[in-house]
Amino acid sequence: MQQQLPRVTGTTTGTVVQDAFGGAMTLIQSSPATWKSALLSNLFIFIVGSPILVTGLSLNGIASAFLLGTLIWRAFGPSGFLLVATYFVIGTAATKVKMAQKVAQGVAEKRGGRRGPGSVIGSSAAGCVCAFLTIFGVGGDAFSQLWRLGFVASFCTKLSDTVSSEIGKAYGKTTYLVTTFKVVPRGTEGAVSVEGTLAGFFAAIVLAVVACLLGEVLHSFPTLNMSIYLRMSGKQGGEGIRRHDLPILYL
View (cartoon, one colour):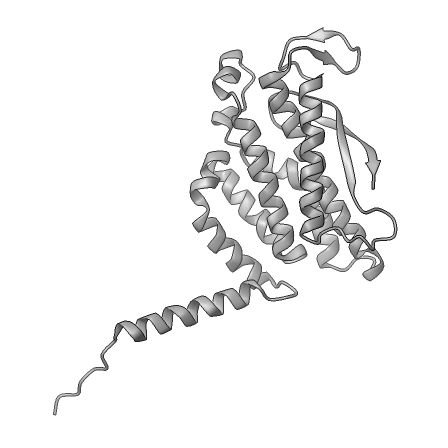
């Protein structure tokens, strides 16, 4: 007698997909985050968001960003990841502003504004240190919020640097060398402009507010609630460490 195989109906398939999706969401929302949940969450998000990622990162840059995202998710959970994602979106948008003009003037980022692993590592170095300190529980509960605050402040600082540089190259009417205050051409290393500085300051405020809304900075933290950094000097164009940061406002 011939054995009949079970029929797979649309209802059965839908149930399997629904169960798989539900299990994935449970893993993503697991608290505290685990390395497994961080890895799978980033894999899913990077696959879905790949059309956006390729506009701002090279392939090697995407690989570096994946490692960064996994680390940040493990240390600070989905809210920390969303903060870094916000940083990426704003920074990429600023980089693309008047790209044709920047290219013509020779001050545009390489690869059409698509940043490589050097930029990813340079942008996230301080935040990664805070992430590792959080994961390994250095200082215990007494220091956990301090590491979280350092993570937020590091990305606010870097976003201010990126936005001020890119907007300054696009709209800066007069640029000054910060060491001598002499007027220099746009794109000169170490030059700042009023337009770029104001844009960078505003970008840092926006990211700090996002951090507060996501719960990354607690209002009950006894020392600082929000740290806003102003880029005082830097290099317009190129990669690597580009500025000296001066904390100017604590709320």
